[in-house]
Structure formats: C-alpha cells, structure tokens
Amino acid sequence: MMSAFWSMGGYARYVWPCFGFAGAVLIWNLWSACGYLAAARMRAVRALAMGAGENV
Amino acid sequence: MWTWFYKLASPPYVFGVAAALTPWFAALAALAIGYGTVAGLVFAPPDYQQGDAFRIIYVHAPAAWLSLFAYTTMAVAGGIGLIWRIKMGHAVAAATAPIGASFTLLALVTGSLWGRPMWGTYWAWDPRLTSELILLFLYVGVMSLRPAFEDPARGDRAAALLSIVGVVNVPIIHYSVLWWNSLHQGATVAKIGKPAMPGSMLWPLLSMLLGFMLFYGAVLCIRVRGEVLNRERQATWVREAVKS
Image (cartoon, rainbow over all chains, first blue to last red; front, side):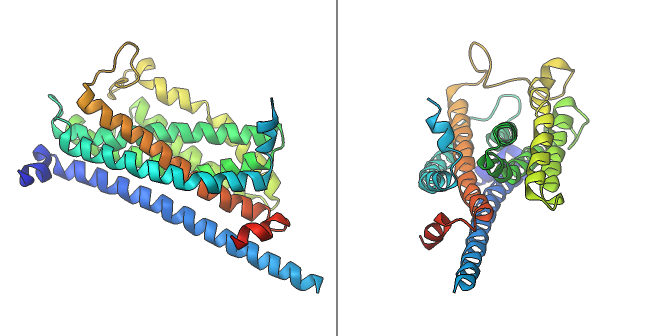
C-alpha cells in the first residue's frame, strides 16, 4: 500500500521532484523575505543611530 | 471615495497593514496548501490517461497562474508609481518581482518534469513554454534594471516601464494554446460551462491555487515591509516601527 503510494504508478521520479522543488521554492521565498526584512530593519536602526549621533 | 487609494500612498499605513495581514495570510496559506497537498497526493484518483503523473498539476498549475498574477500585479503597481508618483507602488512592484520570478521558474521546472513522461521530452519550443520562459526573462530584466541606476527613482521608473511593456506577454501566455498549435493542453479549470475535472481532482487544485495566492500575499507583505523600511529609513515614524 505504502510502496504503491511512493511509486506513484511508476511516475515517482517525476512527481516527487516536482513537489520537492515546490517545497524548496516556498521555503526559499519565506526565508529570503524574512532575511530581507531583517536586513532592512538593521539598516534602518543603523541609520537612526547615526542620525541620533549627529544630533548630539 | 478615493480615500482608501490615497491611504495606500502613506508608507506607515502600508507598513502597518502589511504587518497585520502577514500572519493571517500565512496561516490560511498553510491550511490550504496542507489540505491541497494531502488531498492531491493521497485522495484524488489517478487520471485515466496520465495516471499518477497528473498529480504534478497540483503544483504546476498554481505556480503558472501565480507567475501571471504576480507579473500583472508588478505592472499595475509600477504603473501606479509611474502615473500617480506614489512611491509605495514602486515598493510593491520591487517586492513582487523575486516572488513572481521564483514561481515562474517553478512552473517551468514542474512543466518540464511533467512533459518528459507525457510528451517524451523535457522541453519543446512550444508557444506556451516559450512565452512562459520569456516571462522569466522579463522578471530577471526588471529585477536587474532597478538597481542599475544610481538614482533609485530613475531605477523605479525604468523598471516600471519595462514591466508595463512586458505585460503584453501575459495574455499571450494565457491564449497561446488557442492562438497557435500547441502541445500544451487547453484550459481545464477555467472552462466556460463546467471544468473538465471531477470534484475529487478539482477541489485539491482549487485549494492549492488559493493556498499559493495566500502564500504570495504573506511573502509580499513581508517583502513590502522591507522595501518600505529601505526607502523610508530616515523618516521619523520608522523609529517606532523598528522598535516593535
């Protein structure tokens, strides 16, 4: 039963890489978006700190 | 009547709305994609002609649909930035490009993996495949053009122009299977009358379509927040925003 599921009627080598690549694309999108936001936040904090330093 | 539209021009408003929407989009996307994946892989019956290889449609069709939707969004947002000089339009356009490009690549790769057992080849210079490949090049062009200018405002305008010109490719992709002789199958879900699929196959597909759209919404909101911070880092409201 389980082996029939994994073999996907003989199309396993096409079906599973598709779902694997889709999972990778979803994870990459989340990871890169969160990384982009974190980097932007850090740049903003740095810019604000520099601005505060100039005002002193 | 236009108040909501003008509100979208306000960076702190856009930043706040994006932050509030992200968890909702993400949670609903996880539910829809989770259901669609299990139902598509386990409960949907094999196709009478394609066997289990048809299950590739559950990631291929939503990715292809999203590639067109994201491009249209990018062109409309760029147009808003260009015509009304609303900076947030350019921010949304910049945020949507990498997401759309990644889903275009996913559509091409999964289509290619489906094509091998069904057509006997990973790639053919078919109108649908070729126009989708051009879409990927357009995304890459827009993403490369924006930072190519020293003045960010000029980069935004150039990228918006390219995305607006390139939007002509969207109907070409959609109607390519009708306009030319194509290996690619015609519309399955969006058929006038009734879809050419039974409910047991259709519902997981619709769930995946919805899930991918919600996922796009969640990632777009995160990226838009990053774009807004990058563009407004000298503004006073940013001080409060980065504290939270």
